[in-house]
Image (cartoon, rainbow, N blue to C red):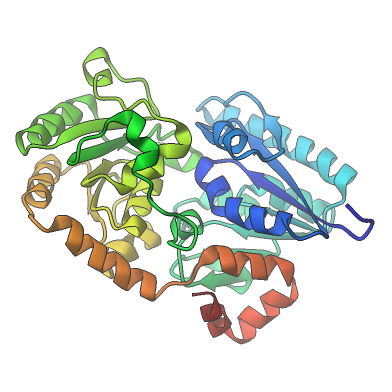
Length: 370
């Protein structure tokens, strides 16, 4: 790496954040004058994914923090100190991430910071209040509401999940998951841990509801597989899918239906054209999912108070004979109106901060990345 190398410090605190920036890192890494430094923390399968992809990285939080507000705050301060020390040593030109850690460190060092996310301000208000005042640019889907920080927003016509699931980046590989011996017709159920700072008080799929769903799905002639971030009891463990972390999107892409209390996987299903039902108290509150539901009809939100509505919706979808084709057509329409976020991000980073000025003066410039 030459003396004129442009160092970019990237911090990912969640698997979906890493997946969004992964292909961008690959492409920038092929450019001679870029040096990419990837920081992560232990979160679900994040480290496994990074290792599988072969990226060099530093884990700045090797044990998953507890769920209490105190432990979240304590871990946050420790991450700031560790990222600060690394940034002092490496002297990056740009810092990129979703966590307030990276924004605060960048501000302290008077460095340019690009914050990437797709959550609305009022959904992640604690994080946003710690992050947005210190960041230089907020790069997010155009539909996202960044609250009082609109002057920092760079909106693009797309979703973060398209950063790794756009057809230009991802192709479903059924042969690659042959080791799982999956049947032709199956429903994937995703159970999230709901342990993030914005998940306090949120509800999702209970064991009782899972049992009812399994019975209903099997009566319709479909198999059931559960992907879970939480420990399942003995009865439900029989349905757990034992797959490699890097294969989950190939499994999802071949599913007949996703039922989930995970917002992230619900978006992933939608952009893949897989019918999905999200059973969550976040229903009606997240702009990206609201657009995917009400503009493109690619997902259905059901509030946890509406158990019967969940079961009726499952029965209705699984009784639709041309379900996959209907949703495939809807996905095609959605993709025709969206850009390729990876191509956009590579351009935006390579030309930053001039790219910020271009986007503010001519937002339609982004459509050359379709």
